[in-house]
Image (cartoon, rainbow, N blue to C red; front, side):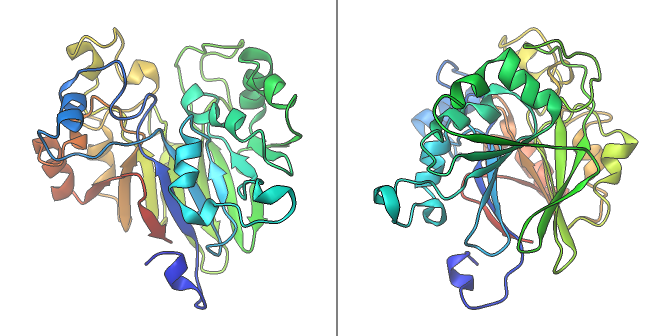
Length: 316
């Protein structure tokens, strides 16, 4: 059921996957790995994807963006619920003016610059570590505030934050040892990466959004309890996936992402969980699960796991 079909009925929390790929999208412009070749030439069943982001709504009318990818313009155009509805300024104001960030990665933040024409400014929810990186490290926020007002709402892990109409979120810290490319952050610095547990207070049902995770620590794992849906990091199938393909010299874990396969991988840990829907998102262009006829894709299906695609809509 779509948000439009629910008009006039009671609705709960709506989620739209705007983009489901990792940085660079799928296919990635400079890559000729097997999945990228297949999506370009149509030789195997697979779908192109934009860089990861989701939109969440408590009622199918007001939407909140979680991460703003470089593909945000195309993502908004592909989803009529996010289109402007007219009014002052010739209808140029973009409805989603609230953006909630999981980290300061470019594939999750460059879209902020494309939202600079938002008539009422941007309400940005981010941890202090993420805010400081975007302001003093990448200077992205310094650029953005030259074009439009930006109101920063500091995100504090474990604090419940209402967004409106019964929708709230609670951030949780996701430790990472990935080297900080900008700023002085490093090691397990708190707030560099967070996940979100979104709750519809009317029904009590929750969704966990976790597009980047290096390890399911006990505290991270505890966020999955009683959630109805999990959108989780599916960047790489193998830990050494990019090394095998000659695309990089680091493992998935070294880049801040828990691989799907292997001992201690996310599939082994997530498949037994009694969560209604467990869906991989933030999928790298090299990951064979993008190929719908691959053995890896069939393995996921046997274990009750799903693979997100752009345009996927969920009702929680």
